[in-house]
Length: 160
Image 1 (cartoon, rainbow, N blue to C red):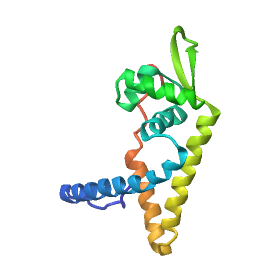
Image 2 (cartoon, one colour):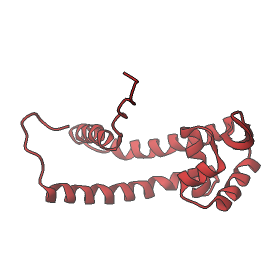
Image 3 (cartoon, rainbow, N blue to C red):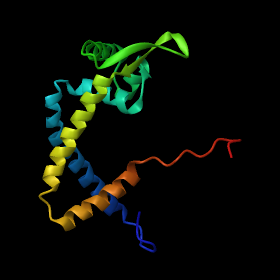
């Protein structure tokens, strides 16, 4: 992530940079979220659908946990998504008494279209930058991906 032999940044520099990135990320997400109005879904429904599309099928409790809401709230969100044909409820193949929630093809398509709208809006803004600045942002994106990507889990005992 840094140049070989480079000294580590000071805590003050790291804190200032973190504060600026935090603020920029919030403003960027707010601006891009305007594109979500075209989906016709509320932000909580889009968020729950996103968890299912990108994370895979989940139980209602696991989905509520991922979204940091209470199960009754998630029950209402899932019912609305199901009514719209964006998710289905299915018996859990591992436990016939349990139900898992799965995104439908329509749900996947709606979410992918939203992502396409958001990235297109951001690309239009970035296209106005000089090529040198765009190259700096591309490198910064590489660094940020490294920061937010969790390290691989160490092998469990007996797994090589």
